[in-house]
Amino acid sequence: MIKPIIFLLAIFSMQANAQKKITSREVTEEIVFATVDRVGELYVLTEKGQIQKFGIDGDLISLYKNGPRPTLFEPRDGSRLFAFFRMGRKIQYLNPSFEVSSGALIDSAFVIDPWLACSSGDHNLWVLDAEDMTMKKINTRTANVDVDVTFPENLSHDFSTVKSIREYQGFFFLLDSQKGIYIFNGMGKLIKTIAHPDLPYFNFLGEELYYPSQNGLTLLNLFSGEKREIPLKKTFKFALVTDERMFLVQTNSIDFFEFEP
Image (cartoon, rainbow, N blue to C red):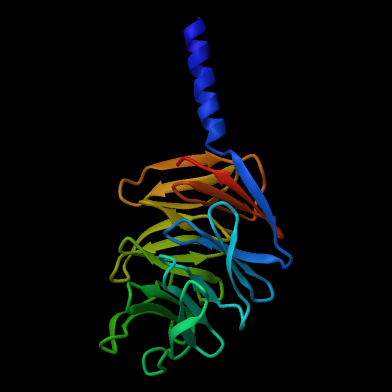
């Protein structure tokens, strides 16, 4: 009987170490969004328009406070950040210090009323056009619309409840705050729906899509369809995971943890 007990204690110890707290950081403004780049560093957007970038151990690396808060912000690989501003129908690419490296207006010849836009590779854009309820992929090098599909009528009557879009692993993801997550292929065909109203965000870890659930995080493998759960006892506004860290974000604070997926 002794060996099984020792084994169970070892497993418990490994699980405890997987979420060992490193530090906490206070943020003076209310945090309204949080995400991570592919390197594993954390970005939080505040109500008044700041973007704060933190390293994996909690150090503040850089700060953006030179303009309005982006409607959609995507840090990508951390070297070329993407921002979309609905007011002004503008996109910008920023360097790691949040300086604008390039930018453009979304041409009304392609999109009449851009609701949301996200990057597609290094040169293309996915854009939702609220005027005609279409999803368009624009090739900015050739100035062509490579994909132009109407949003399925049975899913939503308008884009007002669509809070986020993103391309990842060749799929296009759309978050509807009333319905859940819609997953499309690269040609804009709906292939899966995750029915889950009131989701505030989603993100990715390797081949897995993850989103908040009742007791923590649900992770879905995009290729096998397998699901797993990461239980969390502490409440959070945003919980984000990488290969090394877990970030639990509250309204005005961030907890940094060691993490093993």
